[in-house]
Image (cartoon, rainbow, N blue to C red):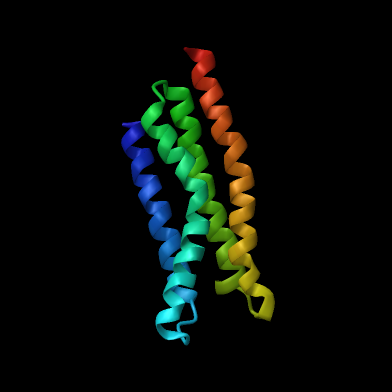
Length: 126
């Protein structure tokens, strides 16, 4: 059951990242905007990938729950960060686009140790 929940959260994370970036993207470049949008979607989705991989490999409930909480936290951070820069920001700035680089970097920096911790917990419990 937890594995299925993790897959749902994994797919939700991809959809969340893709839809939010595509909604706010400037398509004035025409067809040349597609690779840029794809790059930023891939960069923002990258922190979700270790938890998708671990979801397939882990057997114990505790490490799977760590993955569940991490997937929820990644999506919550993305909604908070993206929303605070693009949706709820009353004073838009030209540097707001840097959030598409900075927030994924924070997420990647947090996802690495948490994924290693979940993997180590699995090894410890085995």
